[in-house]
Image (cartoon, rainbow, N blue to C red; front, side):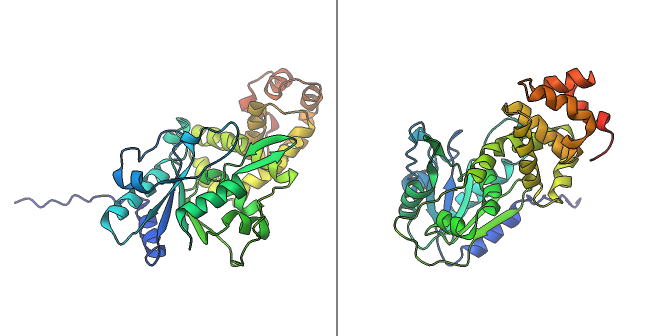
Length: 314
């Protein structure tokens, strides 16, 4: 008889399942789900009976797509099966194919909290999701793990404490496929009136997250080696966000143009805009011309080929 030497490959996210089981072996795990682009657990009976929506009271937010929480007891097989499914979904959401199809992030993460899921949902809805800036209601999408990955290091210790609220720990899959841990050491009781407040600079950066993500995705789509290259550059996104402040000074406010500027900052270097050859471009953008169009006028070539004209990182 011929021996079967077939090896079954272990999913790369299998270690995340083990880590979560270890973290939540003595307490409930609260899975945090985002159904905005289709609820992956719509027909799951266990999830359906336990889900607790976060009532996001933003005037333009459809409550049908509100994130929701599900308490899981990982000592039970069925609950463990749900956990494994959430980890698979979270990991697959960061594949290049899923990102290019704009499938979104169906799993926000997994939360440890001494309170019930309902209490946590009420706290986040009241304290963290809805903000008012320049007379407008703003929705802080911190339930998106991609947003929270960049928001968390930008917050000071008090802001982090308010965001966590009664939660002790949040875990999620980041854009590099790693399991991220977000927690603080100080768990003193919060004031009842505490509310998460961001500075103007923080809001400006939050509003550019989609721009930087688009630039990152464009580069990864061009050559996936960019993904591993950037994973070795901690804080790269903050350097690009800082460079976008200069884009604003140059009159570049259109989102696709800002994404192009961010892409050039990643591809060429965050100080690329100081190159003397770009001075005529900034003259044009400051009087209202689009960045991409101005580049093509000045260099007579596609804006995507700017690095070939600047020759080196500035």
